[in-house]
Amino acid sequence: MNAGMTELLAFALVVIIIVLFLLIGIVRELVPTERGKCYLGIGLGAGVIAFSLKIGLIVFFSLFPGSMPAQFPERVYKRQSVVVSSVVDPGSYTGSVAYTWEVLPGSAPYPLNNPPSPEKIALGKKLFFDKRLSADGSLSCVSCHELSVAKGGGDGHNVAVGINGQQGKRNVPTVINAAFQRHLFWDGRVTSLEEQAKGPLINPIEMGMPSLDSVVDRVKNITEYKILFKQTYVMEPSITINNIVKAIATYERTLITPDSPYDRFVKGDNKALTKKQIRGMALFESMGCILCHSGPNFSSASVFGNYSPYRFFPVIAHTDYELRYELTEDLGLANASMDVRRGIWRVPSLRNVSRTSPYFHNGSVKSLKDAVRIMASVQLAKRLSNKIVDDTSIQWMSSARQLNVSTNLAISDNEVDEIVAFLEALNGELPTAH
Image 1: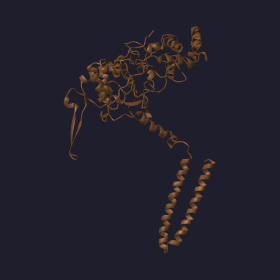
Image 2 (image 1 turned 180 degrees about the vertical axis):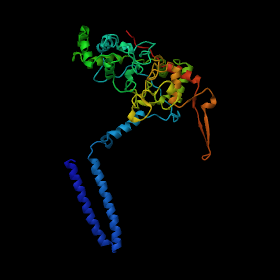
Image 3 (image 1 turned 30 degrees about the vertical axis):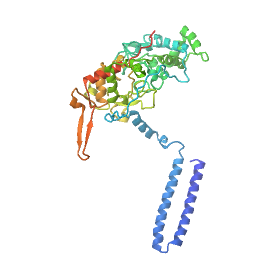
Image 4 (image 1 turned 45 degrees about the horizontal axis):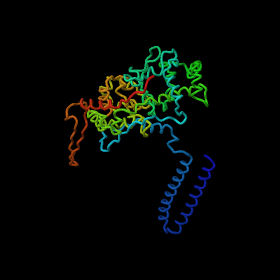
């Protein structure tokens, strides 16, 4: 307790004592009977005690300069875990408020400490394609993030494949439009492209370099890089790991696809989407897909807005899909201490999603149609049915004498096709690979 708090407490106690003596004197003068004095004394005593407790609490809380939750990290962690893993009730979306569709900007944001330049982009591209940054010289960044229509910024494998043919545990996220995401990797553990670029370089089953210092030494021993770093970083020409990943991240911020048919449609080109794609777009909204895949980059983990970047997956537990595709073998950001028994994952972007098969964190699903069915079932609690009767529920509430009518409870094969058609409209022209 500091000196100021001690003085405040002493002053409060003095005030309480003075008030107590004054009240006792008033009681003796105004209350004629002994019983009345007793009752009034008890009442006044209780009031003084309550007042004392109040003063004591004020003094106690004033001992902590910050907000009280900040003084209890365990409680803060539990609160954050709820926010992190919060998922809107799948049955709560009514579509009563129209959703505003947005287009992807023509350029990606960049941090103030890493502004772009033509020289830095060129250097970053060279590093991105350079296999010499791997332990055995067999892999580069582009080996796992192929800039082709067939791979869409991923590698097409179920899980990452590194040096010596080693396999990781998770599917490779696309690098395309990653510049618009504020959380990266499937579990969202880093928040910048610069930080993300360090991971694969020293991952023993990816590029396999023994340390970040070894990466720096490797680059320093390549003559052409000495020249390029001097041209790029005029004020700080030294080859450091920070300058290496800044260049790679700057190049990655050019790998965006802002001119998809969807973007042209939202901008005013009414012929950019087919009628089937427009129906799929409407279903994407009415089914509730926008609860997670919102904004210009179709992800609540993007830089657009301040929404929770994480979701439980799967929300609906113990389904056939969960068992068949082993969806909870890996729990992502969740862990045993949280006792959730469901994964917590960053919401991925759906841009170019028809090009990035296979799907989900473990790459267990090959077909986009199957991925849509799974999401409708385990995230939005939709039945998979072509029967109209399964799409509506009518309940009579006798006490209120009202009908409760719920619609959009099922998703049909035709609706799956329409949603997939809309998702294909999110494909943009890929940046030039070479």
